[in-house]
Length: 114
Image (cartoon, rainbow, N blue to C red):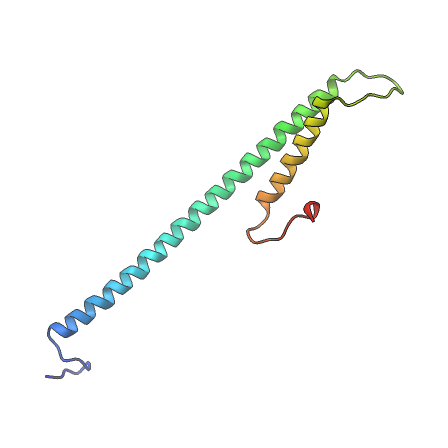
């Protein structure tokens, strides 16, 4: 017998209703998984920025200490040794890394890398 909602009633309608509910549950689960994934992406991104800033601060402090330890000669020329050049490269690499992790996802390369 046909009911008012367009169905026949009985087990066919029950089965159809259960299928709809199952599909809705699947969509809900996928939506929750995406929300959790986005949350962890944001946390990981913030942690990467903090780590990159710390790395840059450490590299700058080490370079400052090395430059302060150079003998001050009025009007004299000081040659940069391998250790000082290595510290300079470390600062540049840390700065570029910080720029890269602070850049929004999907953005192009930084101006210094073009």
